[in-house]
Length: 200
Length: 178
Image: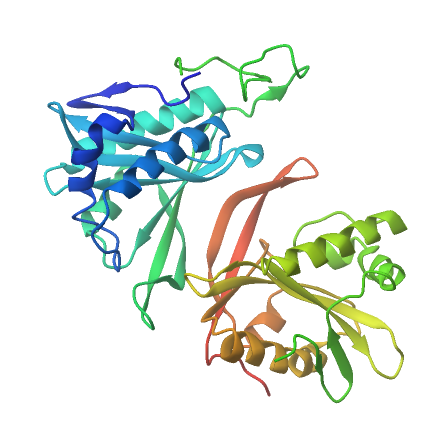
């Protein structure tokens, strides 16, 4: 069963991580955007990450897509801290310098729309870490995210150094799903009576 | 290095699974005491025993630690204070408490002084945060040095309502002991 679908957006698509893409993913991990994060040293770690990405999506704990533009991987859009029963998840986008803000936003939107329609998630969080590009904050605001809190020293950048984290939230106006009889549909996470989303 | 501590008036101790069930039920049997989390009140001894087991298992995994605060004079448990969601990479954790009226600000200062000292100086945590239902009184938190950071929307459902949580934090060196 495939839990992470390919989805198109203007100018590109998001797709599940695949072992064939390890070289391109490794290139992405050489330019981490998160303060304090070091370039990935061992390409072998990506094999495990791809394994995890499948397991996490299958168990509704997280989800990861590669962002592909013109056949090249330029970034990743991910969801983590997935709280299925609370209909919420925290999103994140990482990208190469070539990934434009417009495509970054479009990839994030495609991912959120899928998660909303398929899993009924309606509360999307995004953590901007002090030191990240300002354009990310602008993107979040333009997408409708609202800054909810600034978490002091919530991100560790070194042995004794910390930076603040701004937490943004976007709550969609989608109605909450109504529970129906469990077991009538063997598709994971779909025992809820709302519209079926994209194929996965 | 011990997780159990003593102050002048209180024992700050990890619970004992075999014997603390009635005291825990007595403490958590009040809906008011957990309303800020929010959580429903306990109503049976089995629930208290289950909670004691959970506390022990979470402590064994160093995922959480909850202390019972016992008045040395009356032998009454007046509060439960704990940390959970300990992030050893980021050196932070969430603080949680359930307080009876007997655990006033003076008592809180007295018991939190060794607790905060232990968390910050022995475990080297740098940030403690407290989340509570939006609009819950924060006088004690701010008096202890916690700072308001914002309100996280729709973090849980409780009694049919979406629950927003106010978030407060205390960084190493900010605790106001007196």
